[in-house]
Structures are given as C-alpha cells and as structure tokens.
Image 1 (cartoon, one colour):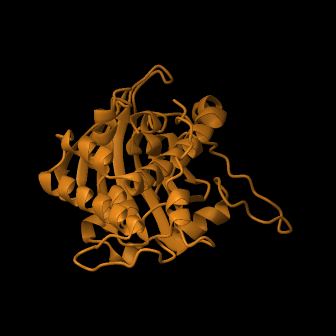
Image 2 (cartoon, one colour):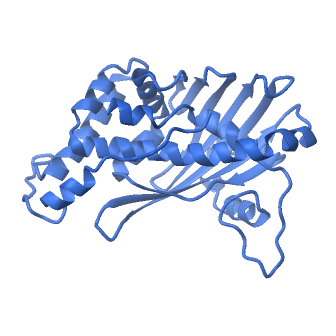
Image 3 (tube, helix red, strand yellow):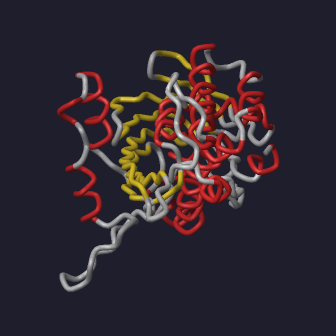
Length: 304
C-alpha cells in the first residue's frame, strides 16, 4: 500500500490552489453558436460559479474575505469535472481534514509539505518549495466547501515574491453507479487575486505549463481519496498504522479516521456495524462485488 500511495501525491492543497492561478488570463469568448466549454476560464463558467457561491450562508468575516477576492479577480478557472469511486463519509472527512491528508503524505515520505492547524477551521501550510500561506474554511456542507487561501510564493520562476489570495469552491455529489458502487462527482472553481505581477509576464510565463499541472493535480488529489477508501475495503490495518504515526493531528481526528476505515471494511465484508448484523450475500457483500471493489487503483504521480 505504501507503493500505491507514493505514486499519488507530491503537492499540497494550497500549492494546487496557487497552481490554479497560473493559467491563461485572457478569456476566450466563443460565438453564440458555440457551446460553452465545461472547464477553463470562460466568462460563462465564471458567472455560473458566482451564482453557486453560498454567500448568504457565510459569517460576516467569511463574506468580507470572499468580497476581498471577488472585487478584483486576476483570473478565474474551473477545473475539469472529476468522478471517483469513494465512500462518501471518507471523502467528506478527508476534505474537512486537510491536516490529516498532509500528515499521511509526510508519514509515507511522498511529500515535504507541512501543515499546522491554527484554528477550528484554519491551517498554516508550507509546501517546502517556496509556497507558504493560511487556509480558512468559510463554509462546509455535504455538497459544497468554500475555502479562502492567502499566501506567498518565492521561487526561481519569478523575479520577486508573489502574494495572493484564492477563493476555492468545490461542489460534490454522491451517487450510485450501475454496479451499485459509491461514486463522488466533484468540481472545483478557483477565483485568484495576485499582487505585484504584471499581467503580460503572468500570461507569457505560466500560460501553458501551470494550467496543465493544476488540472492534473486536482485529478490526482481526488484520486488519493479514492485510493484511501479502496484501501480500507481491502483491510484497515495499513491505514491505521499510518494514522498511528501521524503526530500533527489530534487524537480525536485520528480516531475518527480509524472508525471510518473500520466501518468501510466491515460493511464490505458483511460484518456487523454499530451492533447491527448485515446478512452476507446481499448485493453489497457478494464475493464478486468484494473482489471488484478491492481491485487496486492505478494512477500516476502529480506533475511537479
């Protein structure tokens, strides 16, 4: 399992957020006869993303941070729609606890990223490659997460430090596919505001390179959630050993993670869950279905 995980990740959520910023600045405007693309920086996609922001449900501070970005957006991007097979509770847990994800990557030796929880819904992150910043969850529900990021990038790609803010809106939906598997459909919209960088230099330097990286990393990061879920189906012991070594998260967070992995395994095996026995041989637990769900995930490492 260590090998499978090590093929998945090299970057953090905030690094991906900044990567989402480095994409074409100029909007491509299609004619009325052409359908709008499903992802990218098209104006119609931005308007759709704005309509779906849960602004009315935000706290005053959340509204202030949201307005801070939206009043002067350097670039908007909708990443390609992602569809993964994943237990819905596990998916929500990993989205809600990025510190657990980052700490797992550290334990497995696949990332130098470090993250520290600095508030009930806030984190400080250092990706070890020049990106540092704070992440604040402004809104969380079963179908949408709204996150505000603020940070700085210092590196060889640009002559001076880049400071910026990013508003990320991820919408997700849980469905059952034709084989009765749990499937998560998710889409990420990013509104980015960058300081002290010329638009011409920005577009010329990052247009082709980083846009592709952002799309790829989003697919692979959501794919990590799928791999964790499927690993739990095969047996929770490996995940629990990794969890035991996670020293940057609270005991309560680790216990919740272990409980979810145990529940996933017991459901697949048809064992009792919370004192209720499930009959072996139901559609959820037939040997063929169990073997199918345990098939190892295949994915490639995110581009650096």
